[in-house]
Image (cartoon, rainbow, N blue to C red; front, side, top):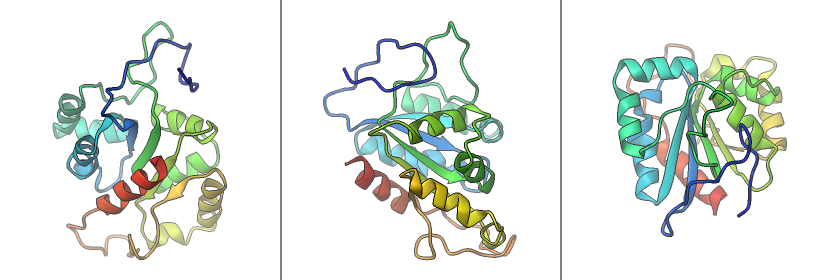
Length: 202
């Protein structure tokens, strides 16, 4: 069995069913739209045959725990939603991911990922995947026009592209608005995110 490094000593991996596409690591961060992670991404991915393992940043986990979505995600996927590291003696709660998709990714998350900062479980997993051969990573930066004008922003995107990250980014999928001036009910481009994930995984 091919083994990819994870967050501790190697343990026997959970078997993936024959009709599964593999394990999709879904990471959500604390930004608008994460409350639709289940309906926008997790449910469609499950329908396509993925086994889905969800990890959230600590703040995103607080948001989704408060509105009941965290419990719904766990019930739907059959796996715990991770937001903290496990103890050394604890078993891995998730199978090893074959592909990662970070959506929505806040500007803060993108900046940390691009500069190698891994100060929470959601960053640790994806940072490791960037250096692991054969693990595609897809990132949707959920930002506004002010974020994009920051002088470090283009450098962050360039660093992620050099690492092999597939960015769901651009005016064709997510036109940028000024802060607090975009449509209040704006839906994230879940279809584009899922399509990009399928292409990279294949």
